[in-house]
Length: 361
Figure 1 (cartoon, rainbow, N blue to C red):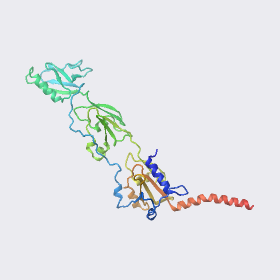
Figure 2 (cartoon, one colour):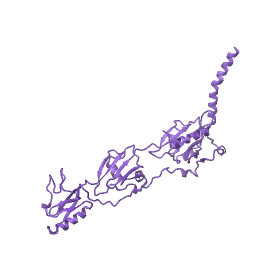
Figure 3 (cartoon, one colour):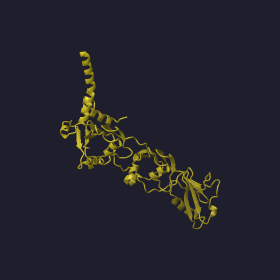
Figure 4 (cartoon, rainbow, N blue to C red):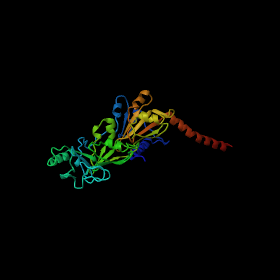
């Protein structure tokens, strides 16, 4: 379905045409264009102004989501801790079965219980939730010193069960991924979910955190060097990769294959768009009248004119980037309009002649 802006543009073109044969006509000469309404602004593309139109309509934007490179894992309920006291194997957990802290199913270690603690021989309950493994290790070392001379303790998380992120949308394998002591970036999470699909819109990835959705232009990180657009994820983040929406420009008039062209996958210049649709109809097109109609706030309109009679003009067209909802229109040559008029008249003349012949017999 055509966007309302495009419909308005096409309606304006029809009004401007106003010609009896039902074709859009737009003046190609500067003198004729002076008679146009004031809200129609014609810009003739040339070497002096083309640089203003070779920038993308939507440049990459830095996200407002904090980059968060200072990731520091905090132990949570359900994590399994591996605790070792060197030279004291009697404090080590037996392999298999149920561990001292209640770990099951082959998970050997101390499970962090619902109250956020782990139970360890001699010292009893130790608070673990919300602390770094180093903090738990230090408390265990201090409390074990009453039973073990100069204990050397190692604490590490052997199963990360408490904190995770979810990745959904246009990825190969949507999933839930545990967070570990190594920070998980947005790109790493998407790759671990099978990567982006062909239909994915990498410019509009959303990260929902704490009830607020943040848009992240991941393409800006991949192609434009915006390092902040690959943030480290936080517990509970929900990453959604949306489907890419068609963002079209429309090619009409004296073109070999008039059609809509999709601008969502890659930037497209005026010359590229015309070439992909077969170029201008040589015998019918007025090369002076290659126009790009662009909304300029209701009811205004900008009209960019490319005089494509010379190769230099086509080179200018390689620098003019189309924007979504642009309408490219190539006008008919005056000789083509004249030939069409004669062609339309010939059948009528033939019928009139036949009637006259009948009347004389």
